[in-house]
Image (cartoon, rainbow, N blue to C red; front, side, top):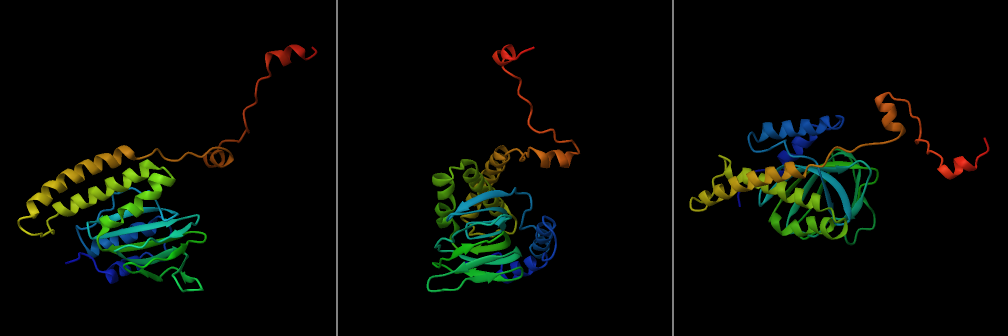
Length: 251
């Protein structure tokens, strides 16, 4: 199997964004990745929720195929869960915050901070805790479709966030479609025409589906929103007295 990316190269791109504020650091990573692999990665996909193994994070995919993906994932408030046991290997570089891991037979947590690397190999599993929040660049290599049930089960059966599940599939289909139709993709001559036809359909349908699924931006209410907009917080609106109470009150 010939892979497009190298874990060491992804780590170098991740290290380029250390020390920068969010979300600037994400753009710096994307630029470094594009300079290293021009025309192979995309910075136009939205941030979406990923709920898997009991952990809730958000993620942004920059590349995906049947055998590889590159993403940034993280959470600003912390989470914890099970990494899953996959036929895929994962290389992570922490770029902000802190992550704790442990594996079977380990009795002390492994602590990872910005610049540290995490590796979870094929058929390995870890317990994870992200303390007060963490952000990391992740490169995965292996038969990714076999891991889709893990990535979708919590969203469908526990959180019942069907929008997040559909977004995961639509973005994955879009990026696979782009990969199959890219000029750098030199597959078997008999297979390539069929892949390119399927890729055109996948990236077209996937992109339209992703756009339709985009939720409205979150709205805040109360004192924080009023302070941000310069308005004076007047508290909750006063309720008008009932007609009966108004009649009972002495003039």
